Image 1 (cartoon, rainbow, N blue to C red):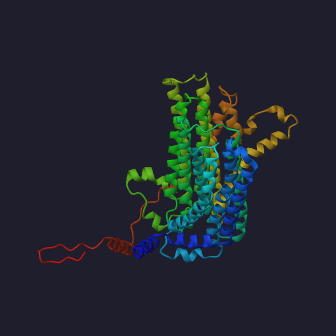
Image 2 (image 1 turned 30 degrees about the vertical axis):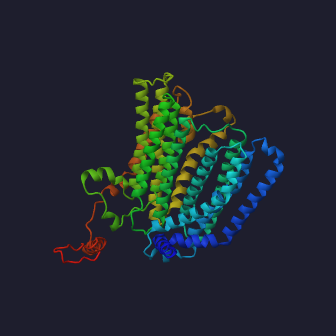
Image 3 (image 1 turned 180 degrees about the horizontal axis):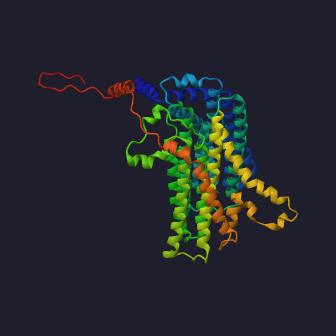
Length: 537
């Protein structure tokens, strides 16, 4: 029996990802893991003795479970939110620094298997830490003061946060292979992870000591959690595909999957915000929040898409849509900065259309729980949405125009792309504020047309109130004209990418694909023609 179990385990081990096995062995045997795990056990043991001795006989009559849980949570959250993600970052960054990733890339392992293996190693470490603290968490439940659903709820979101941070760390580790940039990114990552740990600790401590119990029986509570979970899973998929695209070979299609996920995120966010808008009785603030977050989403996504290469490899061109309907609907998912820019603009316009539909539905079919919009509030929503999409078109288009000239000089890259867009936004929003502050009575002046390039102040000025400000008509003329001019300047880039058509596969590639497909087809099974034929299964 034991031999059969050993054979089953051996076959199961062969089916596992080899990167997962290698990374798990290295990480679980490393000095960093041994020291961290020992410290977790020592601190958990010390907090148990200190907490019980501090409570004394009062532990039988009070409810100290919440306070004890907060201490155990600090001990558990630090390795989950700091150590495990940073270890995932170093596992891929070291491959880039030591030039050992080239050895992995020539093996039969795909980039997805490499990313999944390193992420699986982080999950294995996370499970080890959870198993070490699980008895302590059960002990807090026995002390009363905290219920089992609350413990499971907090641990679930912490584990999900650790998984998401590990995925983000893998993406950061794949961004560059230059050692000096790796040092900068590692410092920034450590600061970010410590900030996340501090925020999580503050939230849990506030919940344990000052807030009331969670309303697990409230449907709105679960709807909010479902929306958060949907967003986390959508962005996890985006970061996962981005990490895979970053380490895959240069001639592969790195963009179509990512752009499909971006559109899916937009649709999911629109659905949840529609549900919130109906629940809130059709309040205009919900529409303004939806438009703001949608524009920020498409600006960030567009800033990354505009940094893609302008040339399509023959491998990618062999997979381009061929029919008229496919070219009309799917061309914007093809790699290329111009197509990415137009996809981001279409996403922003889609948010504007949804905002206008909400205004129309509110006016024509008022909701039963609605308190009614004040006169002019619909115009505020429409003007806010139109100005927001104009800023999206202008800043993304300006960044694309600058990047086009930099590519002619031989400069490109994701970090440079993000830096260009950030600098454009900072200059457009910061320079008018600096100029206005030079006047003696700048603090009394308030908003002026000098801030027309300041997207944040302008949108806040238009959306703050139930009526349009006096500057709104001028803004609704200047900004759309500027958006059209910027879009026209980038139109040649878009047209050039639209003209790419599918190319036929070379004869050699077609023959190799046919051979690979034939190997995947199992051989035909022999048929028994007569009763005397013996077929070996």
